[in-house]
Length: 258
Image 1: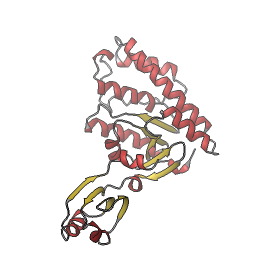
Image 2: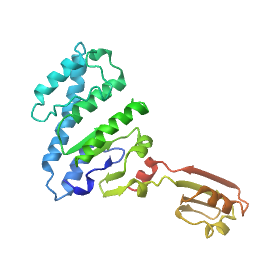
Image 3: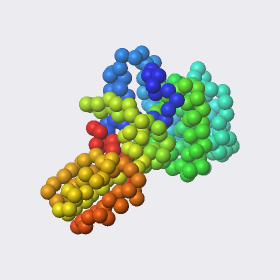
Image 4: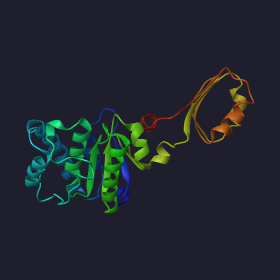
């Protein structure tokens, strides 16, 4: 297992087409470190959670308390004997069929969280969570981080939310395996700037902190990192046909790093 990953909230990114299982396999095959046990636990847990999700539907007449007792019987070797249901605001006397999507999501989170692993992978854990419940889950995750565990997140639908949560990104593609701090992948001050007009060339040397993305005779597109008022003050010095500025998304940043 990689020491550099410990204690951090990490987004595991394998691209739009690759599954989390394929991404983990690619990551595992790329390293000489001995974390085969962690790899097996992760892939087994991913498969197991799908089955437990199906069991939740089949056993929906049970209360959460009864369901968790069954889960513990099957996971007694790994199960941490601490009760987090109250922390996650889950009523153990309530029947499974009565839980909302958000509550069921927290139950699935709990099933994995209560197993004592060195590496965790949470797949879209906050899809139906409000800010309060997301923060409750993050507090528990931070407990694992303090214990020196590795916590990976997998997301295809919530990259905007992930940008607020994660500290680092682990990019695993066919051509690249790279571990980067989020601030380097997609700095919160980065914006995509589009300038059109013959006069843009007069501005080019005046604007600092840019990464050129595209350029033609009469327009330029670049990534800007800096304070907006400094950029605006420079733009006002020359008349242009068109100016547009928008924040670069994490999704765009990751796509550009393939």
